[in-house]
Amino acid sequence: MANVTTATGRQEDQLAAVGAELLAASESLIPVPPLRDRVPGMTLQDAYTVQQYQLHHHLARGRVLAGRKVGLTSRAIQQQLGVDSPDFGYFFEDMVHHHGAEIPASHFIQPKVEPEFGFVLKTTLAGPGVTRGQAAAAIEAVYPAIEIIDSRITDWDIKLVDTVADNASCGAIAVGSVPLPVSVDALGSVTCDLLINGEVRESGTGGAVMGDPVIPLAWLANILGQQGVPLEAGQLILPGSFTKALPVVAGESATADFGALGALTIHFTD
Image (tube, rainbow, N blue to C red):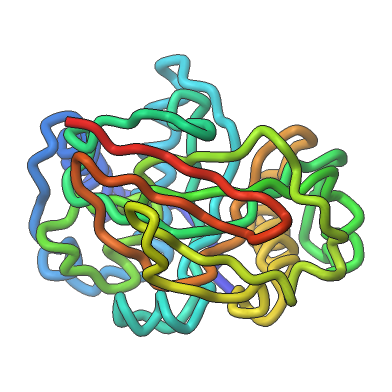
């Protein structure tokens, strides 16, 4: 389990410089070379320090935190990106879209989509020590969701430290307005198809998300709890993808289809 700490001295300056570089890349849409090649001995703790640097930068400028995402929770995604453990990131209110949204593909560098659940919390979760049962009890509603992942690292050439530093490759979030009519305990058996332009391209079940999609929620609460950071009531939490991610371009639509339970579609424009 990651322990997010703050670096000191010369190392802190180096990590802050990398964080500033990623912030600039998110504005210019010009990706940067892999960080692991340029920060000698870069650790997972270093990578989360870079992520925190960017979070603090955005919050200081008035952006409002809407929730958190857990990534790399399915074996398909881990194999696709060549990593072997989950990670987490954050997103702001201005990054959240809804069903039918038209989203400019030009706002991203190299976007891909993932079908997910979206958990809205009714109570605060403050780790460490949060159990699966406590996490499940904190979920007010489950919505269809799509994460648009994007990488500020050139050509998606990433290892774990690269994606963690780059806010777990988060680009934007889409979430439905109508909850899925399903109990929390049944989430592992829910099936979701990922469609591009109406064609099924990938399929998976909730069980692909760490065996039980509630487990990543407890995992996240406990990791953040080590730093004294709770998951707040009302926040939206994405626990991870059912399938591997698929690239999208302008003119394409993406749908997370949960069958009789509901669906969510977004459209990518120029």
